[in-house]
Image (tube, rainbow, N blue to C red; front, side, top):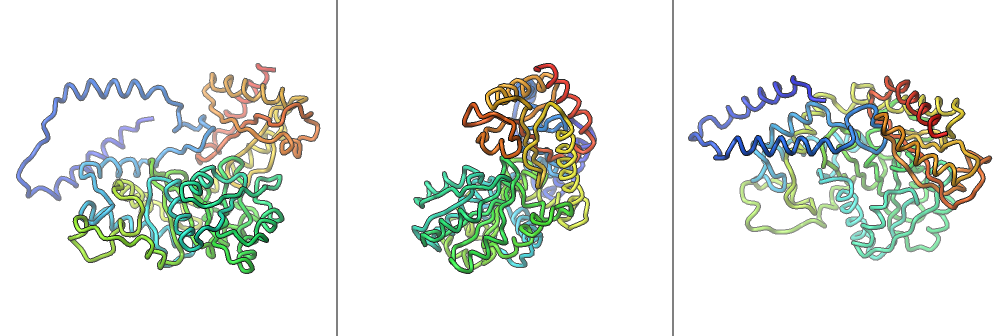
Amino acid sequence: MIDPKELTLLKDALKTLAEGYSELPDFQADYDADAVAAVLQEVATRMHDNYPYFHPQYAGQMLKPPHPIARIAYAMSLWVNPNNHALDGGRASSAMEKECIVELGRMFGWQNPLGHLTGGGTMANLEALWVAGRLHPGKRIVASAQAHYTHSRISEVLGLPFSAIDVDTDGRMDMTALQAQLEAGDVGTVVATMGNTGLGGVDPLSRILELQKKHGFRVHADAAYGGYFTLASELGGDTRTSYDALLDADSIVIDPHKHGLQPYGCGCVLFRDPSVGKFYKHASPFTYFSSAELHLGEISLECSRPGASAVALWATQQLMPLLPGGEFATKLDDCIRAARQFFGRLQQSEQFLPLMAPELDIVVYALNRPDSSAASEGARRLFACAAERDLHLALIELPTSLVQQYAPQLRSTSEMTTCLRSVLMKSEHLDWLDQIVEILETSAAEIA
């Protein structure tokens, strides 16, 4: 878990950082080191009460460990503790953030986007939908029924009506259902989810953009989870078409603290048209005085934000540029391969019923039982049994009618069925599949 090399690298980086302030009079913070040490030992012990999110045998929720360079750069920057709201609070880190935004925009084919980092995807989506509401005041926001619940919450906060659009059996937005909603003429924004967090389905963005030509709504791409997969070479044909269409979306949200190998919290919002910055305009007589340049705080709803996030992301993107075929992209391909191979192994098992084939790196599967109630009970028992063997999964509640599309032999005795869900978002998962499957099979046999 802890690599001593990281501590050496941090120490060396801090030495170089200190050299930049060597001309200042000596100053040391006054604190009781013994008291601090005692509390830190208590904190470290309390932190045992966590799942091993960093380990390949954690294959449950959407949790991916930061890259060592991100951890080290983030920690190193805390000795300055920059604030990226204004240049006065974080000059170097603000410059790094702007460079990161340029690179993230280029990843989607955008050359001059307006954007900034945020505390996470929720805040990033809030800003995107806030701008959409300013451009289409009072009009409805729609997203798929498998879109993240944050969109309905945000719409309520913004005082805008929201509707969920049905999905097809693979978890993607149903185009017939969307067209029916558009005929009402009151839809101002369609949210296309580029990899929903439940099933991993990618909404058909190119088809949504075709409808935009007729109905004139704004298209926001929620790529918080799946955005980085635009660099992957392993995407299927329809999925690749949807990702290529990101070029024509109006706004995009992506979370570097998911597949971008960053610590929490690090989200990002991008706008294709920089002129939407006019909605952020404000005057703060005490905040902006050191530069005539555009401050990040002038294009953000958030005020104080950690400059450490920008430092960590910049360092990571320097080490592993966001390029197709590069090291970073290759690791994303490993995640897709791991999901496909895991899905194939489940298909060969007598214990499990895999559902939709994975588009990205999420695999959803049910226990092979005669009815939905028994399958639900089995999933919950296997979840606990596997955890005792240090394999950590996730549970998801799905309509039994959806599960029956893939397992027609399953008798419906409940409206919903509890299924298992694994997010294979660590590239190392590809090498750990044998171990994961062995624990799964052993656990399933035990509860049977």
